[in-house]
Image (cartoon, rainbow, N blue to C red; front, side, top):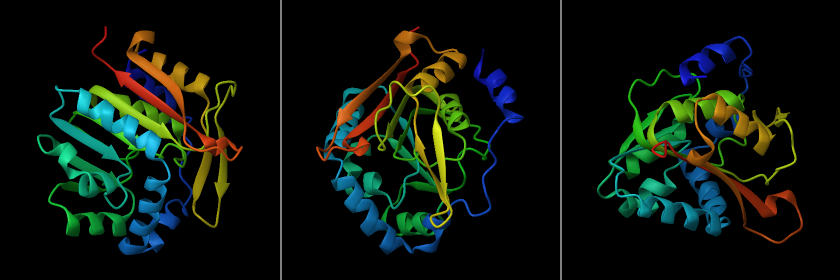
Length: 228
């Protein structure tokens, strides 16, 4: 099944976002958000080291889209990674995007990635710890694949669940977002339905802590659409 056909198929079954969705990201100002994002980023050094190595190994990336860029940890703190790359960051939070625009000359867009119609494609589309909170996991994955020319890189921070048959979604009304457990098996099914072959994607775990909870592990999804 092609990405186009799959997108049409899920339209009737999409989980439409609640009116409160995005509350936690829009009520805090940019400085408050940046303190939180910096703390979260520093707590997951192993995962981010893997991503930076992934990016630096690719010599054929000219354009990048980060989905859920927050307050711009990557384009601001690690801007040297994109010295020869046209970077675009997207986030649902207006205050976060305003903060990014004040701190960086890269391109930043405030929008809902799942809903917006993106006409252009990027060599790499990446997203850290966003899939854990989206209102439609399947639509999110399909959109990532659809707007990528070559590579997709996704991290999920809430654990690694290889035996979970279906995604588990839990709504938090106070935060205005979902807390998702991502099913590895369901991600594989979705990727194959988009037309990807087994050798075009890798789903693996990385250990980031040792406190005895699911959060000790993260899930990493890496896609290379050039392996056909």
